[in-house]
Image (cartoon, rainbow, N blue to C red):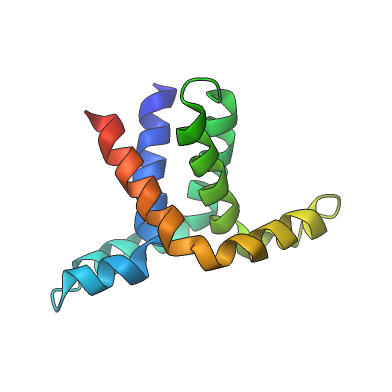
Length: 117
């Protein structure tokens, strides 16, 4: 059950993080923009689910879970600064990961789709 939730969170997080690249592939239909618009209010929940579920299932596919944790950190970038004890370190990590946002998003999407089958 946790694996399915992590897979769904990976797909949703991949759509949110990889939107710039997916929008180029989409053309004029704005399909991915509509999905991302629906998922955007849940960005914090998706990011938290990515981190928590990936930590809980860490040894069941380490690469898959590391990418999930990195995606969760990127999705939580807007709220990370509010955490007093961890805010500075996580904010710096999030800033360093920001240039790789689309790559991590596409990786999340691909890993999520692969895990469905």
